[in-house]
Image (cartoon, rainbow, N blue to C red; front, side, top):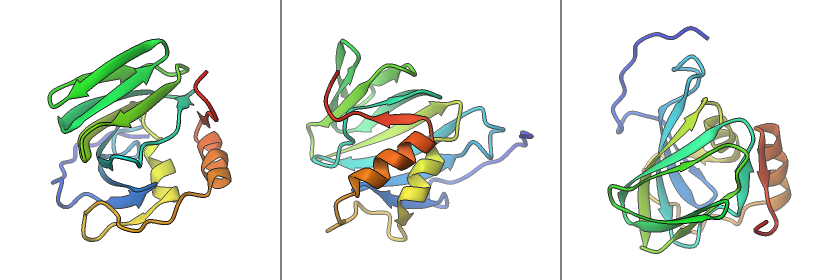
Length: 157
């Protein structure tokens, strides 16, 4: 994929409701020649993803607001505003939100995982946390995750 310069305003970037959270696509694999993707997430307490592992990309979180715990393999990190957490590929991780919401930047290297969220979600025109979002179809989530090189775990390993 060719790389060309680009710029985007957070307010103009595409936004999606996926699995109970708001995701705004700041930079996609398509835009970065596959190098990375960068997504802003607004994640409410209770909408955390289940334990999972990525086999194609490393995932990193930079917390802009709120507080959460990130368990990565045997390590546990308390992350609050200004914290950065790196989750290497092939290592299971789990997020637990402690504040009402967490706003964070999620960097995936290389990019491509953002397509999972787009395919699973729906456009979010008002850019708020979705209200009364129907629960996810666990089988569809697991199947689609597998297509994108991720694995949803039924329990912590």
